[in-house]
Structures are given as structure tokens and as C-alpha cells.
Image (cartoon, rainbow, N blue to C red; front, side, top):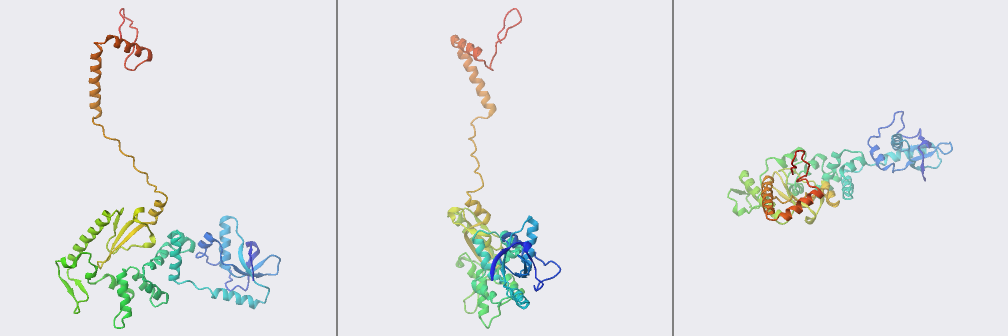
Length: 386
């Protein structure tokens, strides 16, 4: 086939196009990407018997999306096309069917791999949503797959795990994911899925001593263990949370003393989404984010900034430094006026002993002008100095 860029006015829909219809197709899903990047996949066309004109065998929706974009902008770009050689109608029908049947939508794990690379290249969630014609929420859900362990992602790619189970697993901590994988690998155990998995994650679970930040030897409450002594649990949940919160506060103070600019403690059950943040070292203003699960697990994410904060840090910061306040005077305004009056009275008293100096000051004021005094002619018989 020959590849060429053909203007819109030289193209029309072939009667052999398997998607041909009187009504215009729905292009809402591909129009955002065409608007952002143009038509990237060539249309399949063939000559229609008239000079410099071609009919579209496959690519009808891309053609209509390009026409819609041309109507918006007032002009349209030529479309990339693969030109078939002249042949019979059967060849065109086969080509149209193959082109449509060969398309396979990528699975969500493949989308996550692509989206995560775009995020590392500086693309934001709204940018990705606009390019691929999907909602911001769908992009965030796909990026959330990055929080899963690789074994879970691969099992989801192989369709061994359903979508509902994966959505619940994205809310699980790394330790919970490992426990769930262990249940899947044990033929004698049952690994909860779907709604049961959500109950397993958040409801009725004992708190293991493995999640404690404080020393178990100093815990005053009761600890129970299984028959083999391998796993132990806190019998008093309220007492556990009291000690755990004290340990979390101490951990936060340690980070601050070590020079971290800020330590953010999320609410219990609130998850830290790395896709919305950028890795930033401590010396460049990186923060520490502490997450706490409902089962008491604590994770410290060191050296992160939100994408907005990281962008500001790279640009040198948009916040202006507040000007230093002037030093506070020793005397108030009224008190300063009072002192000045006393100084003025002292100077006048001193001038009585130096009449020549006083005369020179009077002459200087008369020549240069002064707001402190003035000379005027008195209309009365005897002049009066004011």
C-alpha cells in the first residue's frame, strides 16, 4: 500500500465500509484524542474512479472526528491514509472487516503501564483524561493499580481476579495484600473476593502485634496468641490505639527533629496515592506522609510533594518572603513629642546666654524661610515680631 496525506474534501465513505450508515457515528470517545493529537492511525482508502478522490474502506469514525474538528477550527488538516490498489469489492469488504475485528482494547494493566509512564513524563491526570477521552476518575482508578503488588497485577491481567476484587485490593495495605496472596496460594484456605474481601479488609479483624510501633514488652494490656505462638493479637483495641497513637506522635517528632520540612498524618483509613505526588528529597522540601490503616498498620512515605508543590519548588517558589518587621521604637509617639518639647525648651534657654548665635539663627530663618516662624509688619504704631 501507498501512504499519503489526503485532504478531507477528497474523501468520502465507501458503500463497502462495514460501518457505513445514514446517521453520523458516535465519536465522543475519540474526539478528545483527535483534538489533542490529530488522527494518528491511517485510514484505509481506495480510488473511487474519479481523479484525486478516494473512498474510505475503514476509518469512518476517524474521518467524522476530523470533520468535526475542522468545523470547530474553520480548517482541517489532511488525513493519513493507506491507499489500496485497485481490486474487486470482495477485497475491500475483507479489508474493512479485518481492520475492525483486529482492534483489541488494551487491558487496564497495560493502560496503567502507559499512564504511569506519562505521569513520569510530567503529564497530569486531566491531561491524560483529555487525551484519551475518559474521565479523571477512570484515570485515577487505573493509576491506583500501581499500589498493587506485581503478582496481583499479573493475575488481574490474566483475568484470574475480577475487577471488583481488584478495586478492593487497591485499598489494602502491602501487608494485607501479602496475606491475601498467601490465602490464594493455600489450597486449604479461602481467599475472600468481591464484597467479602471488603469485609475482610475493614470489619471484624483482630489487631496483630506485628503492626505495633511501640515495644511489646512495655504493653500493659492482654495479648493473645494461637496454639503455636506464631501469631499474637491485642485483646484490648482501645488500649492498643492509645499506645499506637503515642508512638506515631513520637515518630512524627523524630522526623521533624531530623530536618524534614513537614510531617503529614492522614486520617485512619485514608490512603496515600503516589500517582498524585512526586518523589522529592528532604533537602528540596520533601515531606513525610504517615498513613494508618484500620488494622493499625503504619506506613511512612518519606520524601514526597504533591505535583503542584513540586512544580512550584522547581520554578523557584511563587510565595514571596515576608518582609522583616521594623524594630519597635523605645518610645511611643506621644512620649517622643513630649521629649522633643523639653529639648526645644532647653535650647531656647541656652540661647539666652549666646545672643549673637541667636541673632544669626533669626537671620538664617528670615533668609531661607522656615515653618517655625515668620516676620510680618504690624499695622499698629509699634512693630511687633511674631
